[in-house]
Amino acid sequence: MREARGKTSKNTAELGNLRIIGGQWRGRKLQFPVVNGLRPTGDRIRETLFNWLAPEIEGATCLDLYAGSGALGLEALSRGAASCTFIENDRQAANAIRNHLHTLQCSSGSVVELSALDWLRASNTHFDIVFLDPPFSANLYQPSMHYIEQGSLLNPGGKLYIEFDVKQPPESPTTLTLLRDKKAGNTAYQLWCAD
Image (cartoon, rainbow, N blue to C red; front, side, top):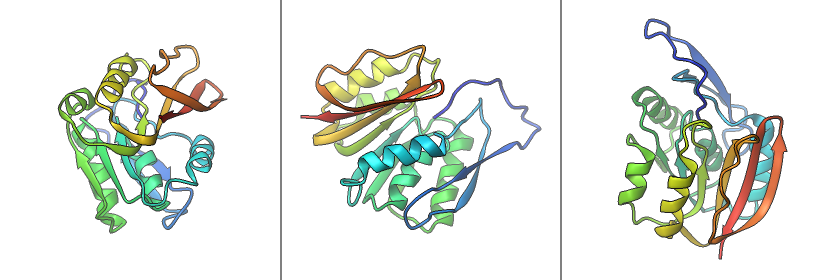
């Protein structure tokens, strides 16, 4: 959920805005700190993604790796997911997600303030939907994918969403089946399924 655009001054309380586009919190606007170029997945992409996930989002257990603003996980919870674990190692961003969950009176979301790779190495939890959207230039797709596949992080039939720079496509997962593949500007996004 983050893409480097330069660092924000510590003296500047710059805030970005996020709008939940569907479900029980539809239209709610939330603010998040602009930390190292934090960027939520755009409305149009989120709309398409959650149309893809509509048949299975209700009651799903979700994981938002590299959560950033929390846009994907919050959207999932708004649309009826049973739970979402947000992994974010930046303290300001993690606290903002905690504040959003409190503001929305949502007890089914939890925030883990830890490196996603460290969390993946130690996790033995399984999910129905995993959102993988690391900073585009950080070379985190392959190691993340390795842990997701090796640890069988996805339940049978579970879905993995990945978002990446069109010019820097990651290697495809080896144990998953591609269901959807789309582009919007410089961003490509895909939905994969565990057998």
